[in-house]
Structures are given as C-alpha cells and as structure tokens.
Image 1: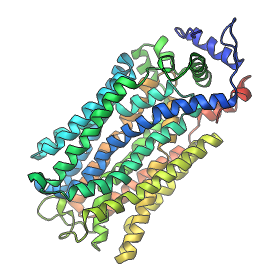
Image 2 (image 1 turned 180 degrees about the vertical axis):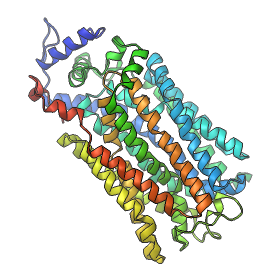
Image 3 (image 1 turned 90 degrees about the horizontal axis):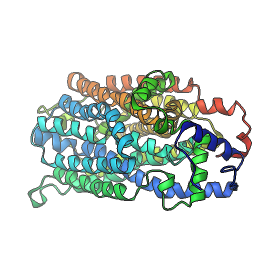
Image 4 (image 1 turned 120 degrees about the vertical axis):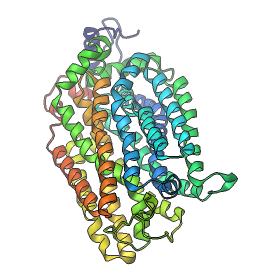
Length: 502
C-alpha cells in the first residue's frame, strides 16, 4: 500500500504511524535495525558512487587549471591579477545562478536537471582548450561557474529525498571526497598529460582541458536516464522498503518535503531570509572557502616555488605573466609537482572520512567542524614562517603546513553541509541553494585578493596571513553554533529510543 504523501497532514500522520510500526489502520509491519541499515546501504550504493564521480569531475578542473597555469598563462599572455580574476569569475557565475538553477530542479526533477548540468559543464570545460585570449578565458570561466552552479545544492537536496536527516553527514562526506581525490588522482594524471605538449601539434594545456570535458558529458546522460526521482520510483527498493524510508525521512525531519506539498517557491524564499542559523553557516563557508579556493588554484605554483629553493616571501613577475611568478625556469618536472600537489589532498581524504564518520557516530557536529577549522588555520598561517629555513627542510615544512591547511578546510565540509541542511528547515531546495550561492562569493573574493596582492606585493605572505585569519574566524563561529539536531535529541519524544539511527 503506497503512503498518501500528498498533503502536509498526511505526511505527519505517516511519520507518527512509522514510530509505532504501523503503515495505516489496516496494515502493520516492523523492520529490524539490521533491515533498516540494509535499506540505507542499498540507497547509498545506488546513489553515492555516481554523485562522488560528479563531484570528482567538477573539481578536476581546479587541479588542471592550477597545474596548467604556467604554460597556459605564458601562451595566452595572462598576468597574476588576470589569472586571479579568471579564477574568481567561475565562483561569481557559480554564486549568481544557484538559486535559479535549484528552482528549475524543483520544477523538472533532480535526475533530469543534474544530468543536464553535468553534460553542459563538460561541453564548457572542453571549450577551454580553444581559448586564445584573456577575454575568452574570462567568458569560459564564468560560464563554467554558471554550468556548475546547480550541481552541488541540487545533489544535496536530492540526498534529503533518500536519507533521514540524522544520517546525512556521512553521505555528504563521502561525496565530498570527490573534491579531495580529484586533486590526488588528477594531479599526477594531469601532469602526465602536460608532458604531451606538441603531440599532434596540440599544446599541453589544450590536451588537458579537452580530455577533462569528455567524462562528465557521458556521466550526465547516465544520471538523466538512471536516477529515480524519489524512493517511490526507485526500482531497486520494494514497496515496503520505500514506504519505510519515506516515513523515516518524515519522522527524522518532518519538514523535509513540505515544500513540495505546502509552501510555494516565493514563500520558501521569504522563509529562508528569516532563518538566522542558515545565514550563520553561510558566513562560515564564505570565510572558509576563501582559503579553500586559494589552496585549490595556487598549491601547484607554491610547491614549484619551494622545490626551486625560493621563499614564498618573494614572487617575481617576469614578462608580465603568472607563469613568471617564479624566478627563472623551474628545474622540476610537472609530474613531480603534480605528485606532491596530491599529498595534502590525500591526507584531507583520510581526515574527512574519519571526522565525518566519528561526527555521525557520536551525534556531534559543531566541534568536529570548528576545532578542525581552527587547527587548519593555524598551520596554514605558519606556511610563510616555516618555509624561511629554505632547502629540503623548507620544502618539507611547507608541504606539512599546506597539508594542515587543506585537510582542515576540506575535512569538515560534509559536516558543514549537514548543518546547513538542518537549518534550511522546510525550504531545503531554496535554502541549500542560498547557502552555497552566497558562501561561494568567498570563492570569488579570495582569488581576487590573492591575485591583486601577488601582482602588487610580489609575495604570498600577506595573502596567506589574511586568508588564515578568515579561516580561523570561521572555526570560532562554527564551534559556537547551536546544533539543531542536538537540540532535538535533548528534547525526548516517544519514538526516540526505538527509531534512533547511527
């Protein structure tokens, strides 16, 4: 028997009945804890691997542009300030179009829209291979942000259709691993591709951008045709399993789908504006992302500087291009730089998994996130200080500090998104888009400030110290947050003990 989830009252009724094991007045069933975990496991294996690859391919571009910056900027004639502007324009387009994109997703359904987004993103990424001037660079970076704008808030909202709220931290963490692993795997792979320079009369960075755009196109079509809209339409769930899952989602977060049957879009926007908690977590991500995106785009250049025995205190712009942000020619191969670039992100993978798993296991989120951010900020601030020693020790200490900063900024991402989902209340489609949209202005401002400082001051130090300060502040705010899930846990209900989930 299908649940009558067509009105808010019906949804609440089914949630209450689920707490007693009753589907309705004439039908009863109970599910053991093992069976419940098996259903969540089935959902996870069907959805999370594909969403992981979606995240992976979107963030491969960050690594590729960072590694290709040297030859790309030289060939196109781009300086540090222009490179920073182009990097930032991706996040401007990304931020401006997230709310419209999620409104379209709300109208047409997640599988169709997510599939289209990923296919369009692949086409734009592929087009980067044909850039010939700075104007083309600006335009395609902006369009890449527009294409990617709805991918992450749309994916997060899609998860709320299949996972109870108290089980969302780990799915968010697993898919966010795509961000870290894209840097680990893509860095050496991209470095190898860059060694193809001149093959078939095609430049190294053209090979890189052309090949990065192909996989997302095919993955987009797969999502379009294979993803279910909700548990009811999932062919790999039985009717009993889908009924239990929908009731569990309603019970653990009774307002998850109220937007579909109660609130319209404009009331949702009005409600989101009045959610102070959502704006606080948005501010946290805004401050933190300034550092995250600096690390994504400038880590290869800083590692190359350290390997060549030069201090981060001195960045010489030679010939007007960001490729010349190094003094003289590098004596180290792109493959070597790519492999070392992957080290901090590999550590971030381990930190992210352990932190997200432990956070969900013990039911605590704010300190798992806030303390990690503060520790990461301190290590990041030490980067220009400890690299003064120079030589091999300077390289080692520099990579340790970079690793701490990157692991700190990325290791709490799943928890942060989980908190935003809780604060979005009954307007998750719009709320998550607002959260990611406004916070990503940090991704626009951070590279702009960094590029300006590098161009004017010829040193990384002021930029790193400024970003470390904003990063530390995000951790302080995060540690002081009130966790909505924790507040609910402290208010006992009749079904808390029997329906408790890991």
